[in-house]
Amino acid sequence: MKELLLVGVGSMGRPYLDAALRMGCSVRAVESRAGAPNLPAGTRAEFHLVDHALDESWLLGALRAAGRGAPDGVVGFAETHVTAAALLQDRFGLPGPSLQAAVISRNKGLQRMVCAAAGVGQPGFLLAPTLADAREWAAEHLPVVVKPLTLGGSLGVEQLSTAEALEDALGRRGGDRLLVEQAVEGPEFSWEAVVRDGAVLFENTTAKETTAPPYFVELTHRCGHRFDDPRTADAVSGFTRGVLAAIGMRTGLVHLEFRLGPQGPALMEVAVRTPGDYLAEAICLSYGFDLYEAVVRLALDLPLDGLLRPGPSRYAAVHYPRCPPGRITGISGLAEIAAHPFVVRISVDRGVGDSVAPMRSSSQRIGHAVVVAPTVEAREETLEFVRSRLRITTAG
Ligand SMILES: Nc1ncnc2c1ncn2[C@@H]1O[C@H](COP(=O)(O)OP(=O)(O)OP(=O)(O)O)[C@@H](O)[C@H]1O
Ligand SMILES: [Mg+2]
Image: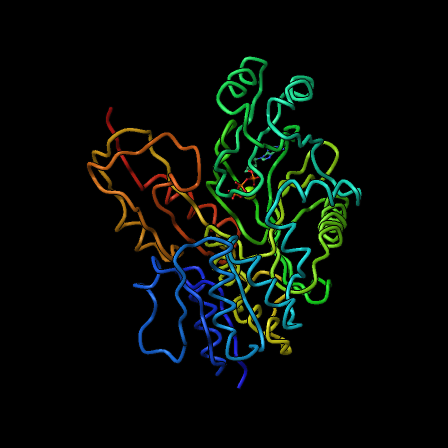
């Protein structure tokens, strides 16, 4: 029986656990104490708890879980699991993205450096010890985007469009170590791929809508995007392969974000992990196969046996509703939306009386909807239905 070590479970990792158990594997899983109450009871999995959801804590848990013998495969799915999973894969000679891809995935500065050396499309950038040290370069390259090296969810990402905005940011964040980049104008996409030994076995492009500058919080993801212009499609294909080569990607799931700028695709960031924002679920819905099982198979060095599907058979989207900041006075339309045949799920995580802050990062979003429709047009109609029927009113 194959043994899988799963670094982190939570709700995002649960489908990996389910897939592995369904495949008849035995599973050792590492989970944080905070996540422990949500672990499934009565499974064959063995759970190891860690005190904090930190890269380092996950490593201790994973090493302890591996203490009674090397597993046959290791899967780490979220940002803070990547390093621990890669260290174990490296130690035991198991399939994985590679230690270098994992290290690069965790640091946007390293991503810029390897892509610069490889000539991969990306914004002009400067990484200096502090933002204050980058003042002159930033002033000459406005508008710029400043971002922390290792955070996610758009936390701390800020576009500075004017000299005044730059001075203001220097006052607030001048001592911080921030990557400074030229702002790329153009539509944004992500690309999700199943990769084995550096070769792309499956790929999906997701078109994105975000809030306007300065904070760029992701609002809508549409899977199964196709570039109609063959030159653009070729450029994107070459670009994505270039990023994989630049980071030294070997085996697993990759999620990268890019904008189509005036000079072609420009990398925003790349990660060797499961995409967030329910994108993995949206991919399963769009293409009709279990992406999680594919990842478990890769990790265990098992054949994929025709599991993957090259093109979408349906079109899924994930949408995050918005409302004006203030105290919520009313929420309506949920039942009607949930009853729509192309709505998989609608959930609003706030109630009447809760306050809604101006949106600056993904964690401030107030709910989400997942939809899947037989055609692109039907998906757009469904998204419009969700947008128009969900009413969240606020005051103050
Ligand atoms: N150089 C840039 N030019 C234009 N837009 C940018 C640039 N850098 C970042 N952005 C915008 O800001 C968003 C967040 O940036 P980035 O992906 O680097 O941060 P993040 O915190 O990892 O985000 P998330 O976890 O939400 O994907 C991007 O998706 C993009 O919309
Ligand atoms: Mg991002």
